[in-house]
Length: 349
Image 1 (cartoon, rainbow, N blue to C red):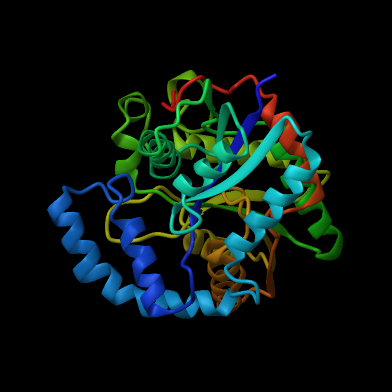
Image 2: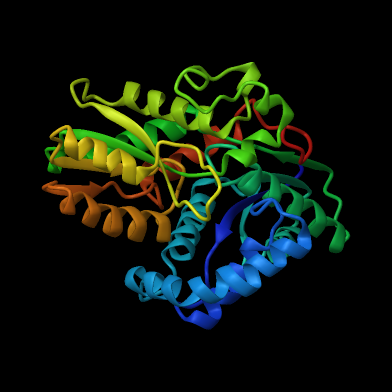
């Protein structure tokens, strides 16, 4: 029987919480045309002359506020999860971890799988919801890296999204339920990474269905199958349905805005303001577009959003930890590997 290699791909992180290291990471990340969709000369000027010089010091300070003794939380938690997953799979499987930006690179991860005798390749971008700026760019990097190292596995499969897989939903709901046992929340906010509306419009099959209002994303189906916003709202509905807290109201918001273009909404800041005006005082926040804790969960929501809510009269905002290497999430991997959604190529469809 062929030995199977699983490549887990995550976004990446700065190697150190310093302006120099953070600047290098931001340049690689933001110069990706899937992330900032401008013609190359304009994108290069915007990133290297404006964004990075302005953001690298502030971003480094934010990383320092969450940095662990072992390193960046995203990398630390990802490595722990990878080790736990390898232990729970039989020896037919070998597991590797690659980052789209920074280290360990996707190329290094593929070389590791080949050296361990993998003949089939299963690529799982660790993004529950599909987006070109995360999933597609990761899969394209896998494709180019396979070509660079001249490796042609007998079979290559990819899983472009998994937000609706029971294993993922049940793991998320379990963590939220655990948090509710220790925190009397009066509202649950599910915050997802934001995207510019232009990212959704550049996919023809999505643009024809998108109006960026509540009604167009009220259902997830064939016409908006790869619509990120529709998938996020569907994730919220699935998590709420899985919770044993029918009286707890919940809402969806989007965070991490950058630049002046129109982004999908509602924004997390606007949603917090709305809830404060409505008299909510104890918010529980969860981030179901991140499977490991990182800058966007720990600093942006756990610290900055909490501080903003308190400034608006709130009593507390408590962050639910990401899945990280929790036992429920580790145990869910075999069911993800057995999903019927794996496709035999690296092109999202």
